[in-house]
Image (cartoon, rainbow, N blue to C red):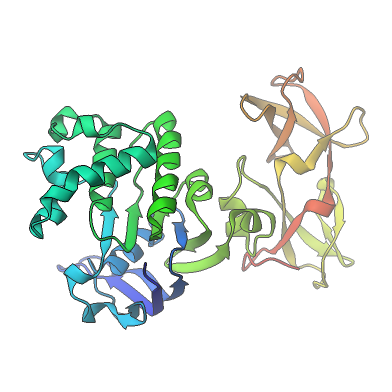
Length: 361
């Protein structure tokens, strides 16, 4: 296993023709990943998470800062001694090699090709999936899911200490993604390796991670377990990025020490803000209650989306140019055009500074 430490790591990409503005991908990044920990780098496209993974793998060099493996600078460790297995989004299988040769490449280089069948059997046993039948086939004869299994088997068929995954299931259908996540979890628990996993999918992050690191614009925004990030966000970005359905955001101003959202009502603030300050309230759909009478806030139903597995309806409602989302019972008789009455649970609300996005606590 490996401890990975990043100290003040920065990376900028330059256009060789100098026609394009330099792109700052990672800025003063600090992170420590402990032995055997499963860490997910979670963020939107273009936030720098794949660049970060490539830096950790040694595929890119940082402009400044240090990357340490067990407190030793990465560039002082020979490539063959780094113990890295990496699984890419696009599989990276050699077209003219059958799967057995692909999986056994690392061991073949060390004259240990006879160990390949045992590795394949171990992976098949842990995942509960027969991949031995794929070993004689070429990539062109494999489905997307089969290619991904071969790619994962290749990563594990080596002297592994650090496992890097870059959006490994992004090209797979939803049913197979769910199954593949279970298989992967079994593998990392059995092999007891340090895992760094890149994704923009929060369900994937929940399934795999011991710790989630939310990244945006090349910086850590917040890190922790999913429940802590979801229930106690430090910023509007984290509150809006995590959670399905998406959190509602209501703009307002401070008036007489309270948040004033005009026809959305008033709410006490967690701490003092000057009158006139702009504040955004975040309230998740499940924390808006429907009323049986007209004592609540009236809103027109614009769209109804059933979530059958989760057993609720998602109502998108409209009031004076504001849209927001409410959860309703699955058997509720709502349809577009209905008027519903809502009450906001202010005890579950988050308050954010409108200019910085930082949480007001």
